[in-house]
Image (cartoon, helix red, strand yellow):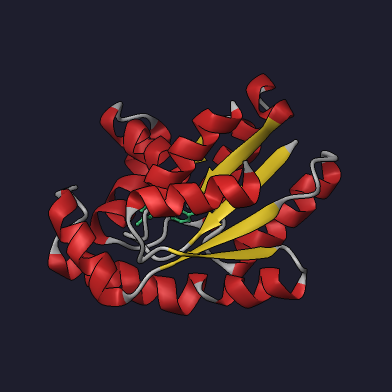
Length: 183
Ligand code: AMP
C-alpha cells in the first residue's frame, strides 16, 4: 500500500513525477491544482469560488481544498493507495489531513520532498505557459511556497515521514531515483 504526498516548490516537477509514479504503482494521482482547474473550466460552484485565487497565485481557502480532498479520498480507487500532489500546502492543511487519515484508517503516508533551486523552477515555469505562469504570478507562488508550504518540510521531518529527492536533476534521473526509492 503506497500513500505519498509530493512536496516541493512550483516547477520542481511534482506533477510530472507524481503522474509517472502513480501509473507505475497503479494508484490514483490526486492533484488539487488539476481538480481546481477542471472545476474552473466547467464553471462549477467550486471552480467559480476558486478562480480569482488560482489566477493570482494565491492559495484558495482551506475549507474548499479540504472538502475536495476528503471527498476524493473517499472514492473507491483511493482505497488501494494514492499520490497527493499540491496538498497539503500549509500546516493547517497538514493537520487536517493527519486527522482525516487517522479517522479513516489510512495512515502510513510518506512525504517526498522534491527540492529544486529557484532559478531552475522559474525557468521551467516560464516555459510551461499555463495561465498562472506569468512572471508576476510565479513570483507570488514562490513567495507563498517559502512562507506557507516550506514549513511542512520540518513538520514531516519531525514525524519521520520525509524523503528528499533532488529535483534539479533531469526528469529521467528524478523518475529513476523515485522508482528506486519507492517503486
Ligand atoms: P498547482 O497546480 O499545484 O500549482 O496549483 C495551482 C493553484 O491552485 C495554486 O496556485 C493555488 O491557487 C491552487 N491550489 C492548489 N492546491 C491548493 C491547496 N492545497 N491549497 C490552496 N490552494 C491550492
